[in-house]
Length: 104
Image (cartoon, rainbow, N blue to C red):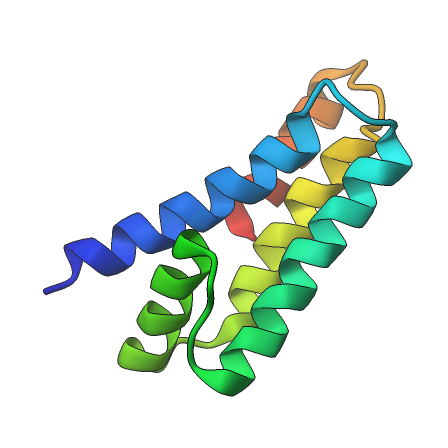
């Protein structure tokens, strides 16, 4: 069944986005939080499990479906870019930002 895997992917992206969008901590602390979360995921992929319920579901999904983690890492990187967002002044700025988010 595919639904649990979809929810795991959504939850992981939401978890990282929540770290980025947090109103607590300075941008450098939030960026470090993203790196810590992704680093923990990398370590847990090697063991095949996690003590964090979102990452445990994600690890299971990646292993079960043989997913390429590169695309997920690219999505995390795009989200992490919101810690220090570039100003969006023109329509082209908005378009480039939304394309980066949608294509990652």
